[in-house]
Length: 183
Image (tube, rainbow, N blue to C red; front, top):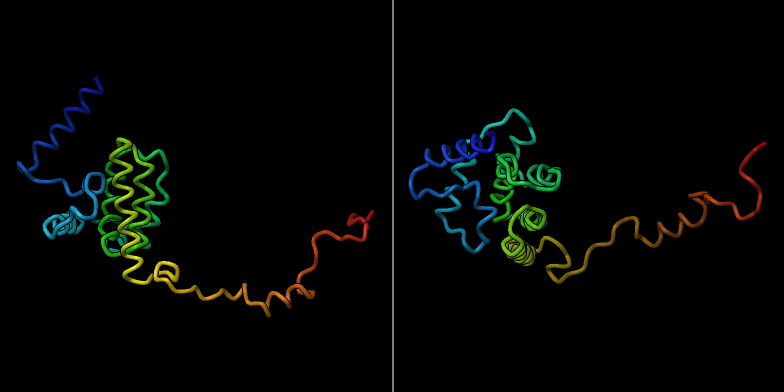
């Protein structure tokens, strides 16, 4: 009986839509990056503009903050079954993934963990990973992608490493054989 109720509720939602209208919140699980023209991107942006939230992180994500969206998606607990919350989070991520290499990478990663047909899931994930690489190369977001070298971190500075070795940090294990236990 409960199953029939769910099917009726799903069917009811579908009847309320305009005939031929696409569901922008399902784009993330159906379309590769090259399938997005101006109309589809505008449809997605229009759908997102109608969303509201009382939570600051979701407000930032709705406003287009890629870091907030990535945080939301990475906190989703697997297995990722398709639900309204997942559709919303992934649609927000999709909206950022067009221009943000990190969002495209997380979209690819999340797609691999979704409950979708394996061929579809793999194809979509690979297409967004390729889009990530394209964005990273064109924007020079990382030293590796742009062909340059990364700047060494301060912790890898040879002078600093040398000073640490000379006594800034005490060894955890004392080779003298004395016990650390003071009895």
